[in-house]
Each structure stands twice: as structure tokens, then as C-alpha cells.
Amino acid sequence: MCGILGLLLHDPTIDAASEICEGLSLLQHRGQDACGIVTCGHKGRFYQCKANGMVRDVFDATAISKLIGGMGVGHVRYPTAGSSNHAEAQPFYVNSPYGIVMAHNGNLINTASLLHFMDAVAHRHINTTSDSELLLNIFADNLQKTGKFRINEEDIFTAVGGLMGQVKGAYACVAMLAGFGIIAFRDPNGIRPLGMGSRKALGGGEGKDWLFASESVVADASGFSEWEDVKPGEAIIITRNGVTRRQVSPPATFAPDIFEYVYFARPDSVLDGVSVYRSRMAMGDALADSVARVLAQHNLSVDVVIPVPDTSRVAALNLAQKLGLPYREGFIKNRYVGRTFIMPGQQMRRKNVRRKLNAMALEFAGKSVLIVDDSIVRGTTSKEIVQMAKDVGAKRVIVASCAPPIRHVNVYGIDMPSRGELVAHNRDDAAIAAAIGADLVIFQTLPDLIASVRQFNPALAHFDCSVFTGEYVTGGVDEEYLQSLEQLRADNVKRRMELGGLGTMEGKGGGAVKHEPNGTVESREAAVGCSGPMNGADSTVGLHNTYSLQ
Ligand SMILES: O=P(O)(O)OC[C@H]1O[C@H](OP(=O)(O)OP(=O)(O)O)[C@H](O)[C@@H]1O
Ligand SMILES: NC(=O)CC[C@H](N)C(=O)O
Ligand SMILES: [Mg+2]
Image 1: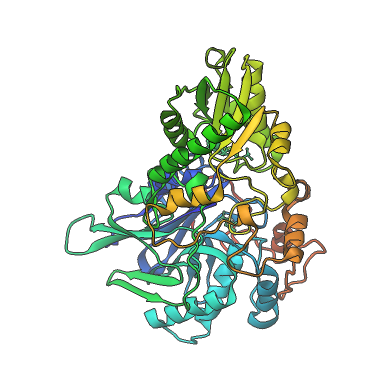
Image 2: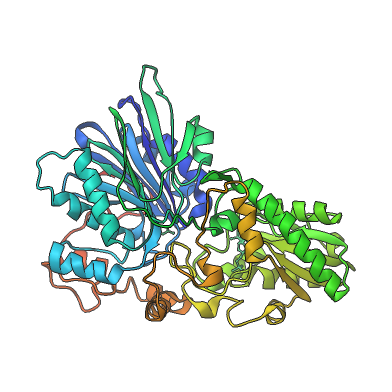
């Protein structure tokens, strides 16, 4: 899951970069691999800084000071397509037509046919394995078709509408057109979140500043109010003259990803009218009923409820209160270790669960403990913490999950591409308990999970629950696709790819320059004798690669 952000300040003489950077740090939980900011200054000139690393590592005062201009776009990345190479850090840039920058949250599922189209019809070169670079070029191609010297809002709506007809998958996007403004759009199913807020302009005057962000927490922190969600299939354009919005795709099933509420989003955000915090409290309440029922069936009792920091805390507290059990913080979290689920590679994830959590013997020794987590995906966390609990003397370890068993892959922006990596795949509850070493596991039911979210916005009739059901709202996800995804992105494949360089993009087209057999970005750059940025990627400098794109 990535985080995206767009900011347009009414007063173009105030630089937007430091606020974008602050905002990105509030979205850090959505992506820890890479981050970037592109701003637009005088005469439509773009300035960029992006690299692998966390926001605090990539941006310092010097880097920020070189990002000139009163509007900009930012991104934090958790890769779900392509590689983790810094060349795929976002936002992406394409110079033609008009100069466009884009940040994308989500994942496309028809990349093979889009790449063929790029190559055979649009004759656009895609220089990385990122689906987001592809998405940007589809948008650029549609704008190009206007053939105009200067475009207007109508042309942009037509281009985004065309894109929505061509692209399948999940995409919440913030784009910036040089010297023009910021464009935000959300796929017709609204799978990934995106909202918009405004405030009285910094520096005074009558105008407004405008913000787009994946989560409302960014608006809260920077004084933006009137937060509203971008509607599925809608495009919104902000210029210094104001806002224009349009439904650009025919109506489709609105199905926001329920896993945002389970795990991804910050609890202090409100997504599609639902407080993430309230939904997690409700998940704890509902899970309490299942726990009471299953414990009675097994004639078992529990002495203490212990959450797995961080995400499960809110739900675990409600669960404990409802069952009248003590709630204890038995696992202490090292605050300097980030989220483990979104780390690349199983070895790193496993190692970091141990680095991140420490079990306090005084809360476990001799007790029957109920450990509550928001979800059990690969089982990395639960396997380690069950062992840790036993190592410090727990008498019995029961694990309860706020989400149902995850048996299917995610294709919409969460990197769970391989069924074999999911601990619940082909396992019943008893087998899952055995796999993670627990005495018992108890899962939330799907109807209870859905009710925990929907009760706060009954208008949400559907959710993307594909990781629980295997039903994919966009269509286009068949066995052949799932197998190809597995072959491309399973942990072992990614490891080989990282070791051997970037690898190739499936179905990658030609372009005017002859490709090396395994045409990597590096070999491509060497082939064209280019030491500077390609599509905004910079292979020559690491941190603080702030420079103008012109
Ligand atoms: O079964 P797994 O594959 O381990 O995935 C599930 C775990 O990963 C996440 O924690 P994470 O450490 O990413 O973040 P958190 O600190 O927000 O809980 C999630 O909250 C679960 O604890
Ligand atoms: N998690 C995401 O939203 C990822 C965006 C995009 N697919 C990438 O891999 O960069
Ligand atoms: Mg966790």
C-alpha cells in the first residue's frame, strides 16, 4: 500500500515542499521502501527528490529547500509491482505532453496488454518494471491525443475517462501538470482511498489551499478541513482558479478495500466516511463474541488479553473490556522498528518481528494468554510471538485475529502475490494453530468484520474482501493470471530478481534503442549514453538527489 499526496498553495511564492514532507511522514505506515516529492515552480519547472528509504532519511532541510514551488506531489512506496530499485520510486515524470508527474497507490492487473499497447500503438517507452510508470504513460498518451498546444479541464477529464476504460485494477492517483494544476482520480471501484481538503490560504487573501491525500490524518495535522472522499470513477482538477470535478467513468460497484480498516490505515483517519478507530473498536467487540463462544466449546478459560503492537491494540482493548478480562501490554515494541508486514523478503520480516517485539515474562509466566492481532497473513508475526510467549513461561497461548483467515492473494496494492506464502492457504483452523505453534486460533467471521465497518456508513454496500473470498471486483483475475503473478512476485522470485539486478518487465516493448537481452534500466541508460534521470529516475545519485527536471 502506498501513500499519495498532492498540495496546491494559493500563493505560488510559498514553497509547498516542507508541508508535503510533513504529510508524507504521516503516511509513512503505508510504505517504507522509498519516497519522493516533485514540486512545480516558476514557469512550470519541476523539482524532484526521491530515493529508497524512509521520509526522515531521504529529506533533510537542504533537500527540502531545493524543492521550489507552491504545488507538488508526494509518495511513500510499498512495492507491489516491479522491483524495489530506486528507479521505481515515485512520483514518476514524463516530459511529453506538457510535463506530467504522477503518484499512484494501487496495482494494475492488465499490465501485459497495456505494455503491448504502449509498444505497438502509442510508441511510448516504459523504462522500468513499475506499473505506475505505465499508468502515467497511458494518461500522457490520452492527453497527447488532444493534439492541442494548450489543454483545458475538459481535455483532462476526457483523458482520465479514457484511462479508466483502458486500465484494470486499483489506482488512486495524484498527478500534476506543469504550470497548470493538480489532478486526482480514483478507480471506478474506489478500491484504494483518496480524499480532499481545503483551508484558508496561507499568507492571507481570499483564496484557498488544496490538499489531496490517501488518509484524512494529513488534513487534520495541517489544518485542512471540509475533508471529503474522491468518489470512485471521479476526477478532480485543482488550479489556482478553483476546483472542477467530473464523474468520468460509468458507475461500477463501489468496493473499498476492507483491509485498510483491518491493518493499513492509521486509526485516526476517516476513510469513506468510516473512522478507522471506531471500526477497530467494533472489530474487537465482535471478536469478543466469537472468542467467548469458542472458549466455551473447548471448555477453556483465559487469564489475560495481550495485544500485538501496534495495530491490534484498539481492538484488543475493546475485546478485553467486553469479556471482562484484564488487558496487559505484554509485548513491548521497539519504537524504532517499522511495520514488518510491508518489509521486503521473509527473512527480513522474521528477523524484524524479534527486533520489534519483546515479551515481558511477568505478564505471561504461568498464565493462559489470549494474544490478539489484527490479522494473520503469512503467520510470520504470530509464529514468532507464540514462541516468545512460550519461552517466557505462558501456560497456554490462544491467538485471536480481528480478520478472517486470509486464503487468497491480493492484486490491488497489497503485496500478497503467492497463495503458498499465506499460512491459512489450504489449512483449517486446527492446522493454522499447529503451523504457528498456538494451542488454539480464533478468527473473526467475515460477516462480523463487514458489519464492524459498515455500521458507521451503511451506504457502503460492498467491500473488496478478495483476500478472504477470492472474489475480485474488477474481474480479469483468473487462474492463469494468479499463476503468472505468483511466478513473477513470489518471495523466492523477488529475491532472485533483486540479486540479479532489475530483471525485465513482462511483455516489455522495444523502443528505438536496442535492448540488452535482459534489458535493465542500467543497460538502457548505458545504451543511450545517459547519466542523468530517465523518467525521473536517477541512477547516479543516492540520497538528496534534489534537482530540477528541466
Ligand atoms: O501474519 P503476518 O504475515 O506476520 O502479518 C500480519 C502482521 O503484520 C502486521 O504487523 P506490522 O508489524 O506490519 O505492523 P503494526 O506494527 O502496525 O502492527 C499486522 O498488524 C500483523 O501483526
Ligand atoms: N502499494 C502500492 O500502492 C504500490 C504502487 C505501485 N504498484 C508500485 O509498486 O509502486
Ligand atoms: Mg502487527
